[in-house]
Image (cartoon, rainbow, N blue to C red; front, side, top):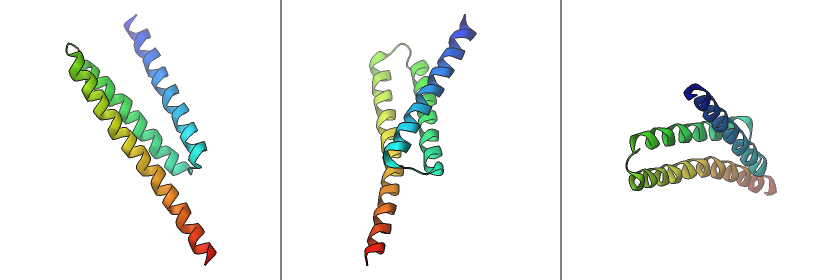
Length: 98
């Protein structure tokens, strides 16, 4: 049963990351490299949340705080990729208008 549960969690993680990446890529029209970076950020996030959940198994409050911190860190990293893309596109338009 343990192996089956682990496989299911792995598949849930992969499905979540793939969906998030596809949505962000479509929304912000990211290229393949940027989408891969978003995917890496999200896989790293899920791995770190799993580790935190085990580490703080008996301390729910500490676990929640750590997951909140990891979420903020992940969101900042994702927005950094998106903002870089948006700034790059805006700069290209400005140059094109001159």
